[in-house]
Image (cartoon, rainbow over the protein chains, first blue to last red):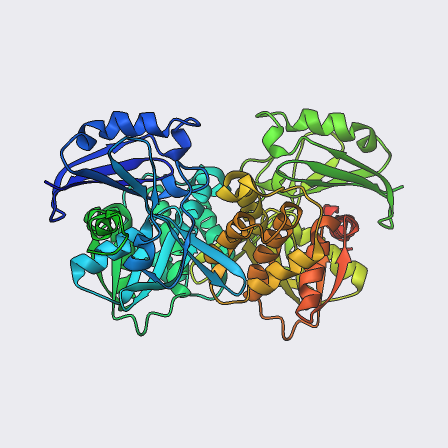
Length: 302
Length: 302
């Protein structure tokens, strides 16, 4: 009986799922031991503690995506160059010989390049493959919000190219470490009107460096209440990100990620007339399941 | 014999100068006790310790600009609305009755408004008046780089309007608190080629949120050396600020501030075909001197 231990091992946390031969999720787990919290040489022990029981099941194999394949991770899996599809990525998985008799492998990330500046992702490529599989798509625009958001374009089942946006990290920096931190409540719930006000403001042509200061002055002159300010800032940032996209030809944008973030992108995109559909963790599991055929010894897809 | 004790009292530091009746600087002083470091009720004591001897001189009067006039400062001096010139600002100075027999007053800042969002400055208006006085101008574009940069337009001797850009604060946040901090040396000396590379890159239409991530990947793929990365990031930020300006009609841009910053703006502006001239602290002293006529009891200019 085939089992896949599917793991998305990120920088600050990890998630795992036990999948059956059809990719059905039998059980899910998560843990706070992202790669930055694992001591040097400590990956085998953390892996065994978290997933040893699953790996002991008959026919169990394991595929790991995300930052575990980075230089700072468990074993480095060199990036695949775009355009890259399931075949290119699947043939580049890197084995980890840590558990006698068990097949454990790491999925490489992708790299792209824009006028001499590289761009990288690790883990999102698996989510995109999974989303294409779930939605029955072989092309489209995929947005993966997070600390470092990804906008990827797929054609013929492959990731044609992508760009990273530091939107999530800018929000954290501004709301926690800047002059705005004095008046903002970074954890206030989403205020849709203030958020959309920020999205609209971001299109005024004066840029984020200027518009962000408005979050300060709106508070200073008591034009906006504290619970609204963080949503306004979030709208300024996400609006700034959307401003630079060419969405005319996109049709529908596929959002993949945690609902607290995808909800905001959906709001902003719909406000600019772009339809969206949203997927969560199921995209990761579907993507790892889709790649699991490459765990066969000859590295040919099933 | 008339003497003016001219003080620019900012958030994190202050500077003072003793001027003669013609505005000539006789002596300068600076101190780290910006308004955030003065305990509640502590302004008179700090003032006396730093400037008591100058105030004891025959005919000495004092004008203070900057954040000392803010809500968190010594005495609040409400903002003057733009357009505002020397007369509007001079007539709005606020007396501080702290030293019997001595005239001490605080210069108000300016406020502007853009589609319902206020903007503010405190201290820069004095530097602009001083620059106009020194350069014999009654109009122009004035740029005052700093944590919160100001771009102001003057017409007929008055500040017609202005906008604030958080460029300096974004640089500090990104170079000290973001993922870029791992590979950047925020204090590396200016590398002109890398800086101008960043300025050019900022014009690619993909926005700061994307381009900033390039500072990470250029380091990751060893395409740019550590000493160059901070200059590249600085170029991205200043380029982003310039991108949103309408400089066609500006002719010459007047830069006012510390040379470490004005030098970068001059480089970036010249690269885009805009001439610059640069002024330093002398603009502050000339501006306070120009306003000192309003220290007469009837608040009419000399």
